[in-house]
Image (cartoon, rainbow, N blue to C red; front, side, top):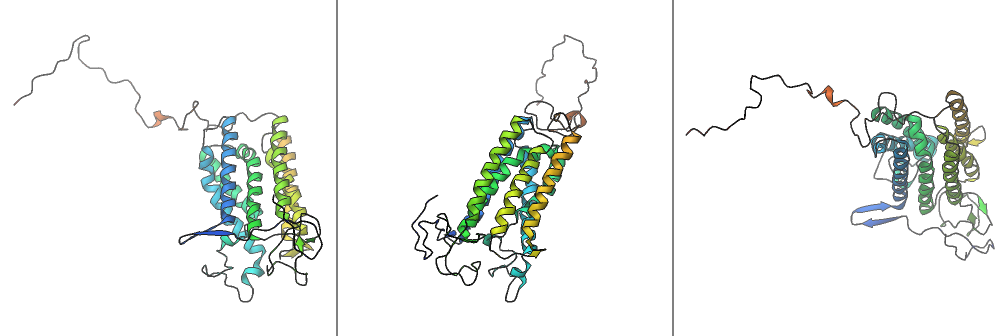
Length: 334
């Protein structure tokens, strides 16, 4: 991370500058760095998950069959969740929620606003459907996905840095984040040059540490049946409780806590429940990455069905030809 001398009047020695641009125009096409960060994270998660599933004995690239449903549902539900928990921002006075050509519409996902817990809900539904479609056990897929998912989330946080959004409270620490004046998320009354906690960076570091923990603990103790995914939920959600508590962007409050703090608390509890329940239900190892009856027939096999169901493989009927008689061609008739 590049550090630069800050001109802030707060007297700190150094700070983290924010990017001055968040997109590039290629002709009529505008490419937002936020979207590139998310796409890059999805690609990394897909590659790592594929490698882990293949080592477990699954067909190579079966992860694509699952992601065809999981990824679109994750993005759609993530946006719905974000809009629902920030309704005042999209449906307040002077807003244009349904006009896609106006800034601040519910469709403008390129401006930011993807809730990870919404993505988890939508992605889980899509993954369950995709696993039923492909024959992969859901918990096997969830364990294979866990480290790649948290790495993808770390990469996605750089999109918040480019957008200068979701930063924390004011700070005089040397790694304070510079935010451009006029940003609507800056609390009213703060002096010019105020620095803020770089919550995006905190989460990047926390998530990468979490990926290392999941990979190490999963291999060291041969955790299966969804236990690695349970560790992901606990680790990621525990960090989100802290980051959400120091953020200054507007959010709905329930019983004194931000909605995402409640979601993170629920994530910790859910992860613990999954780990405990699965540990009690399954004492051995998974017999196969496939559900019973859906196993591939051989290394490199693609079809999970028996070809004899569709092809006649019976012996040909007997003929009256004498054994040993050679066949000759007759001359063509003019």
